[in-house]
Length: 186
Image (cartoon, rainbow, N blue to C red):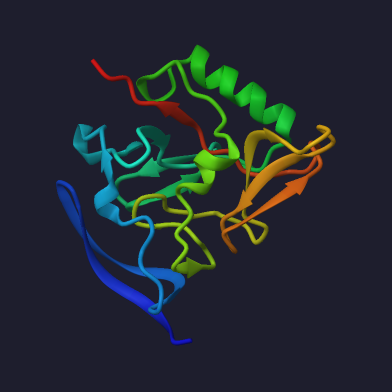
């Protein structure tokens, strides 16, 4: 199994930049979340914070909760401690909707299948397309909340974006939140 570090010039719709991709990627596997699958929808001064996934019809907050897009650094920058409990994640969804976060008031926590749809199976450490979803400030555990409970409801399903694996943890653990909404069709 051949491994490589991906260094690639990237054109992501209307702006370009060259970045050193920190993921380890396997050239024996095909890309599962190519940048062409996504488009940014907020191009106000290229302050891109919302991403639409054409494959799934979902719209994602580009940065995880507790971080925000920094156009100058072309990255998500931490604003506060970004790891929260599941109960705090539910409250964060309410806050996002009551404040029209990123211009929308119908955000929610993704289910396990939705969150798994943005795993980049070709790469790990992290297993996500970092050009679309930058992970600046991301800590070693790398797990993100979903709204999917385990059978019996004693724990909740998460996706670990360092490994790309689904796991189950207690509701009181500290993890990240990435908000999602359904794309409204006219």
